[in-house]
Image (tube, rainbow, N blue to C red; front, side, top):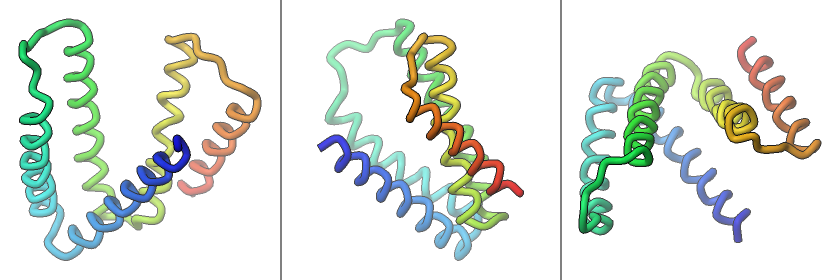
Length: 134
């Protein structure tokens, strides 16, 4: 079940990047970002209305989530601009290496351990990133 759900996410994210590239090429990056975020706002309101907590709170966890969202949106906006200027096949593949940052931070800060096959996979992913950037 876990693998199936991960495959669904990979397919959805792959379609998202491909469709965004097609749309942005058609209407331009500024309009594409506008419509992407407009659709996101509408979708977000549906989610918020369903999940709205009975009591709003501000604590460390909430602040971390807000910071994560700001960081994520910042990366996404930059990603939109580089996707507009360069080949989707390269940009999407190269930026898909972002989990390496998460893994390294998890090892350094959360003291998580990697198995040998996982470590080899990460090293191969970094090599793939280097080869894509050439």
